[in-house]
Length: 87
Image: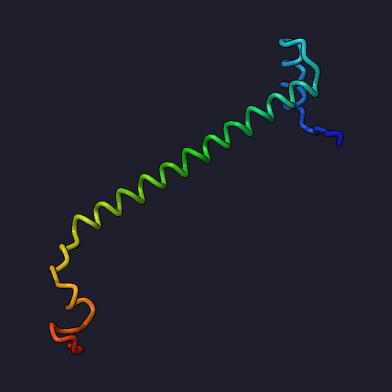
């Protein structure tokens, strides 16, 4: 698919890069696109990791504020007394 750039600044920068690097238009555009895609993937991964850390921090804060559960016997939890009758 051909790309048609209608921006004077982009054309001037491309011309400058071609002169500085000796590379062709396709090579320069491809390299720049790869660099930008790599950067955006890295930004996204860092953002996901930062969110995971924040969720874990919140979990720890909530856990610290919770009271420990009242110790109960298995029978209390199930709802039966020592004779096997419902409580």
